[in-house]
Image (tube, rainbow, N blue to C red):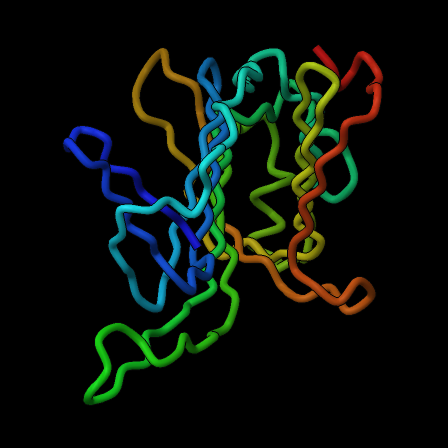
Length: 212
């Protein structure tokens, strides 16, 4: 559940959102920018009260923001770190659990939340130094992507265990511009691990290749 506090009133009110389930997650890694992400949730109902559910809420975090300049320790495709020639300028992905609202006559809000198929898609934009990645799309070759970011002795690992490239566009915009290849991908079930995607968070002391 979530709670929103309206502190501008004489007697603060608190809106509670009940039965929340994560529906979507998205992440974006773009050169020279901060790493960004977002989540959205689907809930059953809500309630308003003058009493908070948490009289001592946690303070806001003071950790540093992770960026895509010196906090990305590794981007690997099919187990091999992507070389400078095919360097990635942007990587985006989203996870959609495809939840659905279940309503009924006589009920304000939902009576349930239905689960759907988990759909995990993404895009990568790289310099077109050679045809390696483009040919994987042409030949319908399965692959994988592993991204590791770290800062202040914390690390996150995003692991797409099995994926297929679903689209590819080679862009040669104009004279004096780099040739780029933009690839779309969709994650598939890894039969050995039993999932499509893994995300790890670590507080261990990290090697210099990952930590900043």
